[in-house]
Image (tube, rainbow, N blue to C red; front, side, top):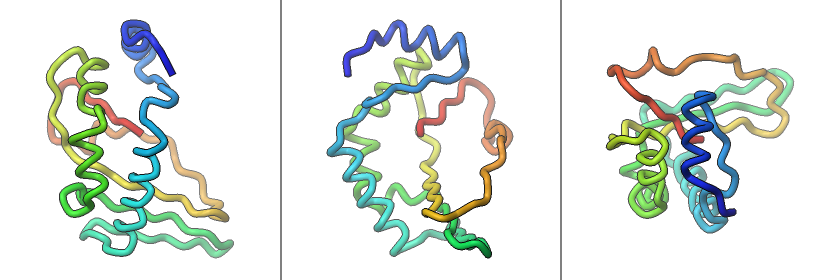
Amino acid sequence: HVYSMRAVREAYLRNGCICIRNAFSKEWVRELRKGVEENFKNPGIGFEYLKSDEGGAFWNDYCNWSKVPQFDAFLRESGVASLARELLGTNVCFYHEHVLVKEKGASKETPWHQDQSYYPFDGPLLSLW
């Protein structure tokens, strides 16, 4: 996908969010899926697994990028830092990754929320999904 980074940044600044389809290659998506599988097999201290009565489950974990090789490689080699820098128009600092998986059959809705209150700093904040 070819897109104008200027137009993407303007839309991001205007709307507060942006969807950039195909920002990363299919190879990176495959690698990240392997990383999610690795994360599930070897969860970190933030791991949470919630199974509903109807079937299906939701699980999440965070701060495992240094122990999951695929996450580490993505952060260092995929261009995600450059993308974040271009969107914010400033230097960026990585805070953490957060894996969220909603399995097939999980019926509970994810509530709308604002993440800013979870972070111990002020200033520009960017979450990439």
